[in-house]
Image (cartoon, rainbow, N blue to C red; front, side):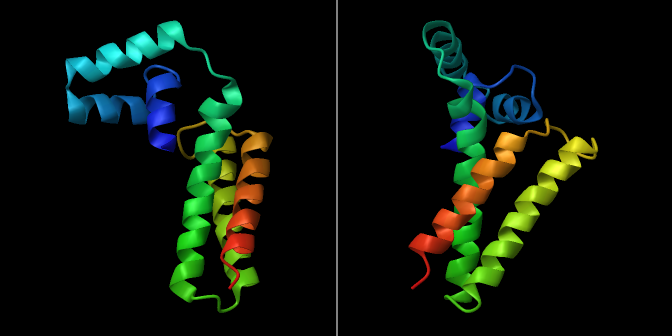
Amino acid sequence: MGTLLYFFFGKKGTVLSNIFIFFTENKDILKLKEHLQTNFSPPDFLIYQLPDALWAYAFCASLLLIWQGQKAALVTFIAFDLCFFYEIMQYMEWTAGTFDWWDVVVMGLACWCAFYFNRN
């Protein structure tokens, strides 16, 4: 879901957008993207922070399921640290993307939600 939000509403020419276009090469999808961008303008939060939150939740929940509740708080902390490290990599320009404190906040909330909903 997050990837689709990035692709259909994110900035043009991003690495993710170019990869998606390369692998699909479907003119109907590109027309749909153009139509959506022309006729809808969702808030930036839905385009940028929500995909990060979804990714962080899925990552943390997956780790919690793998570890089956053992040391759940530690696993959640490690998952958030890895999410935060990715934002730091963006800040240091070691990877593509833009550092944003709101990304850190929503990823922290998403990890907490994963911990809360998967604690048993």
